[in-house]
Length: 152
Image (cartoon, rainbow, N blue to C red; front, top):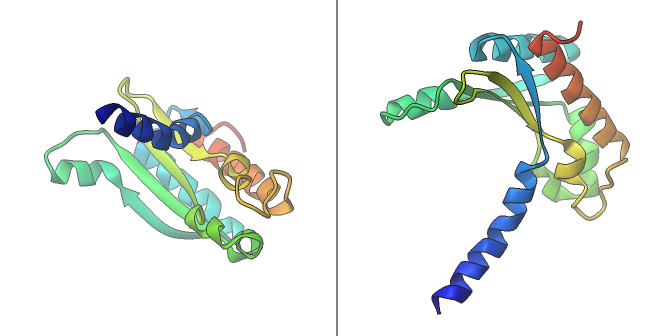
């Protein structure tokens, strides 16, 4: 009886494991705070709303754990996101966009995000080549490269 339950758990976890492989990571020599500040400074002048900045590192320290520095920035604009929601309301689970700025176990700082085409194209009515998916993809690549100091 235990084996079918384990198989069910493994099958349920498979999409999450596959999704983790679709994460885009951009390295930076900046600290987490510097990179997160740079990302915020990059998106706001572009007319993008920064909805929240979650400090996961601080949260972990509140429970006496150390995950290093990690901040999640949640941002977007209805001009780009609303068409995805029109095509499929379930896009609202994945939007607004998110970038995790974190320090790995070796002290390297990364800006990481889930590629919009991978994240949204599995929803009925949304294709990987939808104009808003292309816009989100270009914006995330541009914003993270600029925040990392890799582009002007």
